Length: 340
Image (cartoon, rainbow, N blue to C red; front, side):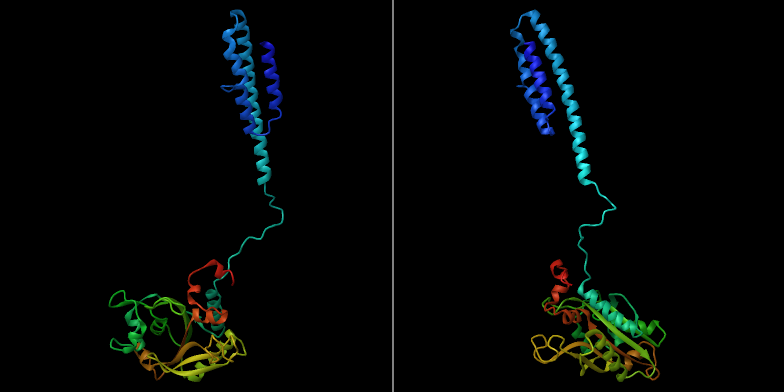
């Protein structure tokens, strides 16, 4: 029996040196010291031995069991230390090593790119950025801009009303009234911002969209100054080869008023699906500021003149990048944005 105990001990110690991970260690532990292990079987069979022999074998078996338990714990600690060292080696970072992977970088939204380009062109022409609230008084949004309560053009705006006196601004033109009331002319302002109208969402309409407005107040400015400013603007944004034309239009806050077209940036003016075969694309509305607006804001129209022009940033973005559905510009789909 003693020989069998010594054999179990020697075999177990030999196998312990070959164990490579904690799973193998646990399996060896169960096979020797577990409920049905080889050493446990000997301890169970001691009842068949003589009393004197049982004492000797019991002492030897318990001694070997304790020795093996100690060896198992020692081996487990060594395995844990070895595995930890391997893990540290795998996770180690050499901060002096040049980068091997290029991390994905963000992209500027195409509307942001277009807005910045338009803003920079106008700032380069002497304009200053001017902002104001999106939740606006009806007085600034309509009345001071020559749209009194009974004016039919109010119905064209499809307005979100907060209450009888407060609206979500339908255009950036309320900033004209704020500028006339708060700034000392002369000045040139570019006024960007979100605007809101009651519109069904489709490929060309959105209830929330981005506008930019240019506003110049000075003595003796005229329609010719407006045309010259817009011609320089169009050439800077769309290229030197692009042509521009004025079409008569109507806005309550300008007189005369005009729509501005540019030769189609897709077909070069030859006619295509985008320009519906006309060779022209509408980009903005403009006009000489109505004297009533200047009077409503405390300026003498005999001394001061002004002109304004407004454009949709999303529309210019669509024209520049050939985007056929305005919803793509507002849904923030990463697959779409990654193309810019």
